[in-house]
Image (cartoon, rainbow, N blue to C red):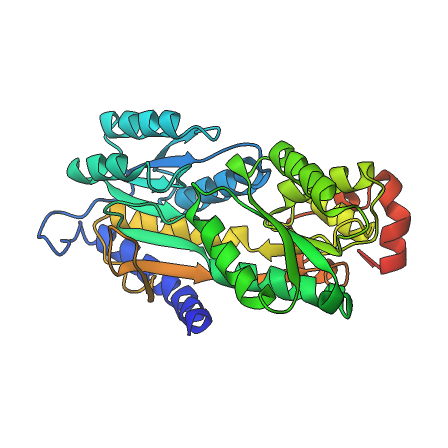
Length: 367
């Protein structure tokens, strides 16, 4: 149902956006409250959570900004800040956006619960908030992300497939994400729904701040506790942590065990073609970013989201939030051509540079 909703929403977006232009050409329109709808001269705030994960500065920011400019005939003003994994700093950044009187705010929360008061302050100031990638608490007006439990199920199933018969007799380490990120809880829930009862979980960690260094330290502790010959595989919730995990495995002389990931980072794709990481979850950042931009522009102009968002999602503090959930893909060495290369995320030259060329040639990557 969710995937069908995404497909319907994608088809309807063009219709809704065309309507935006015609309304403006007619001299303005009225929203549901009767106030005059805005034209293209809107002010959009964009707040992203951190810069350790490559995706935010490389993909999310430029994609969102590009789409907003396209939708507003290059007239929108975009104000941007990155919180660098600091929840207090992000709260200050929201205050700045309120002071600067943005019309709408796209917010990817560092800490989904801690940001609640800031979201309320924005709403009190008449600023609509689009929760991006993470479901922030507070009176948000729209939400777009991926089906996060499906991400965990995809990772868990891939790990079971890689383990094969070893799933019955071996044990794994689970390296979940940060407890401050509601997505991490959903990834974890999805993974457990697949793994529980099918493989023994020897050690499990919630990794502070999604830090690769913390994941590395946790993995070292797991190896010490379980014994280096006793670990059949590792569930890693994202690629950054997978890098820290694999470094710990190598240092302990452990090789040829499957490690999962998420985000399809370039380093992870290269580890996959070298058989160091088994898989990642590829998420279409262009689709997620474009949806966020569409929602933000529509809200800033006082328009209804019904044509864009067919799903509804609820948090502890907001019910039936208009939402779009974007599907995900299990990325392995078999489908690199059909995912990140086909979608223009990376070029063959980027993936297959230097020492990776011979592995690419064997896999037919770029061919």
